[in-house]
Length: 564
Image 1 (cartoon, rainbow, N blue to C red):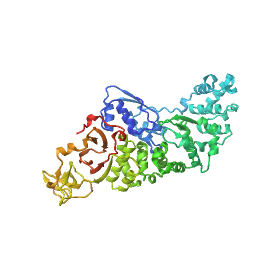
Image 2: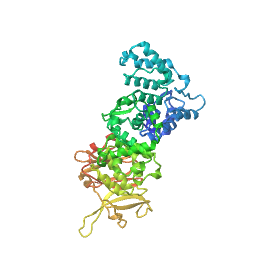
Image 3: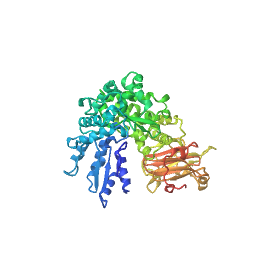
Image 4: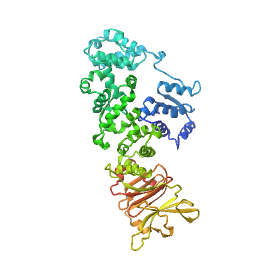
């Protein structure tokens, strides 16, 4: 099995392994215990641990090593091969019995293979294998000694060979280097010597590559690259960028993004490591990039933002130390990729987060588990803001212009609720009945009416958040079966979701997933949904604009909860 770590969290890597082996594990500990009980050894190969994590600055490679690879390596039934950063490799080995692990560091002299590197260089320069016909490529008597010199200088690095040969082919009008000293022995020298080879400036090359060295995800959209170079430089770099193709060519790799666009990234992470190591301040560079990304949001409307901007501005702001200031915008919460944003927010000390960011952090596991699209993210956040006493943020979510499936009317933090029902209190002097929520709670709960059998009832306004402690439970008028069947909407419930259906067509109108199990739910004839979890109770007005097809990224098997 090869669970690639690129872009994934430690938890995601572990559950890929569990799914592959069809383990019946409910938690992390059970994954390792079930692997240990396999009746035959299993081999797991984990590449690119250095690229783990949705966001660069969150330290996910270390978590993959400590939380996944170390326990795997200690499991007798697992044979593990992992590609990890050098310091983490030695940390992993130090935590295991002597002889249980072997560290193979291809940069150590014992793995040097100059003949292989020379063949690599000769192949890259060979006209019959794609290289242009040039004096130093077409003549074997020139090409082979040059390839051998490239291999000697590169030491143990295939990457240096690749960069050296690409540099030569990128400037075909220049003759081959006449001295070994004009060939690179490191990635840094490959950058500097190439810049000089094309009459460029090594520092300008590194400056232009800086946004790519700090880029998140699959790569940087080309139309953002120039803007970010200018931001990092602190001056207009448009002219320089227009003439930079020969300067930057050997170090770039175009890739196809998930949205069909071509993205740019560095040819190898080691190039990015070299560029970042030479920056006077990574924090300052990231601050300038984050500011430029924010300026690129049209009218500060996150629905119009470039996907890279909305999904990764938090990652840049995190490394700049500016993320807490950014986490006050409900539009960002709604439109940013919840996996990347959650990873960034979780890396900020909890006491540095404001109230809306703490609400987001509480709901983020639900957003990622359900793979919620923006309308559902907005709806879940609207409810969470009401629960956490942040009505102004709930109102801001509604102003984003999305058709939400509900509007949260109120939330009541009340522990111990075991059941809920909707009803009404009779009106006096010709007044209409008052819709109420009746909440079953333990006896002795403040404001509750005892109903015997050790239980009590809290009566609360269904539509208006008013306490009706003076109302007697005997006064409550419950819905008849005929009234329920005549209502246009109907309700079904699973352990961690409640669904509202259109009775006439049995179409899904809204689904309310929960991070904690539901203990009760009910629906009034006019579409007010009453639900309760261990956190308390809340009421939501179901709106006609909601549509299950547009809101849900994943609807579980209908057998989990048939309409009732």
